[in-house]
Length: 143
Ligand code: ATP
Image 1 (cartoon, rainbow, N blue to C red):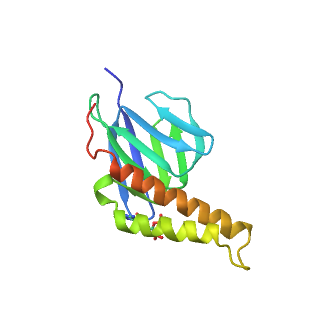
Image 2: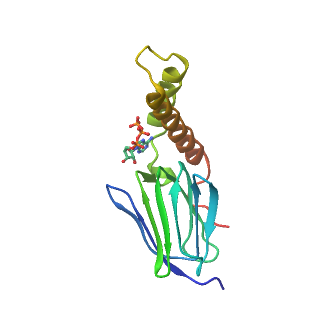
C-alpha cells in the first residue's frame, strides 16, 4: 500500500485540492516530476502542464496547471499555481480562441512586439494547447 501524505494545491482564486494523496505529478521547468510520500524536500518552478493526483491507490485524476511552484516539505506537498482546472471546468471554446490569438501574435508580430511580449505569447499558446489536450483526455480516470 503506498503511503499517503498531505497535499495542498492553491491558486490565487481558490483552494483547488486539499487532502491526502499517495502520488502527485507536475511539469516543472526542468521536466516532469512525480512525488510519493517521504520524497526529499525541494522547491521547483512549475511550467504549464498536467497535474496528476492520486488520492488513493487505484484512483487517478488529471488536471491543468499553469505556472507556479511546488514545494515538497516533510509535512506535505504544496503547489501554488496561477491557475488549475479539472477537465470538466475547461472551456474548450475559450482555449481555442486563446490559442488562435496567441498564434496570430506570434506569426504576425507588430512593431511594438518585443522579446518579453513574444515570450508571453508563447506561454499563452502553451496554456491554451495544454488546456485543450487535457480537455480531450478522459475526465475522472481510474487506473
Ligand atoms: P484567456 O486568454 O482565455 O484569459 P489565459 O491563459 O490568459 O486565457 P489564465 O491567465 O491562465 O488565462 O487564467 C485566468 C483565469 O481564467 C483563471 O481563473 C483560469 O482558471 C481561467 N481560465 C482561463 N482559460 C480558461 C479556460 N479555457 N477554461 C476555463 N477556465 C479558464
